Length: 275
Length: 81
Image (cartoon, rainbow over all chains, first blue to last red; front, side):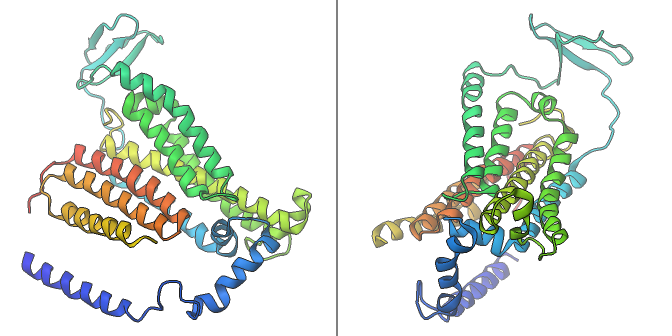
């Protein structure tokens, strides 16, 4: 079986390399894309959208429909991860463990008993290990800066490399770092499962609603020039602002999906003990 | 484009990609995949596609490596084949 797989991959690989020889050479000025498409974007982008970073303008404006469904793909990845892994309403384990935060005393509760509601106790699992002081302190210091950088990447996507996808991933990674350095329960108590799921959908909705709003103003779907009256700017600046709105939507959706996928994968859908 | 750097990175891409497929330890495979993503990121930035390089660095080398480690942690560490 292994040999057959090896032969197939070698055959398709060499076929691909053979076919790749037919491509126009790297940065060939006579290739079809370089004759009319790229010059248009290079020359007209700043005129039409006032966005210096051509990649962002192409991604979120000229090719906005494509990016909307890319965001939908990310959203569905999160939903599928949830549907496959999440175990619904398992019955509570017979013995539960609570830790008194101030003294570190752990108490074991048999089924049917409860502790009085108080913030001094935290629920822990049987495999609980005390969080490491160094890791905890370093992560506590780093996470705000990571989040600030993520917001910068989202907001500054017009002028420098970056945008909604990258910023959203970095924002999600900061929460994942928190979940790793503390534990999953602490992360979920700050960002509940419901909130993550709602944010995931809200991000995609922001994108789609921006497009829908352009339709209401009598222009094409995702033609942000239509928002000029609403934003009180001229049509060219409106396209730049429209890109920002859409990037924020993408950022929210991607951030929530990353956290959602991590929560489900690292706890095998039980939402108890993380990584 | 400096061909020496290009050659070194391309060699590392092939080595890490092959290693990620060959290695029996899945945690090692996840880490090799992260290294592969990082090398691809360097390759993208050499070619001038900085946006793609940024995505590759954050998604490929960052978050997906964490997902792989989480998945390995919840399943088994050794492959059957």
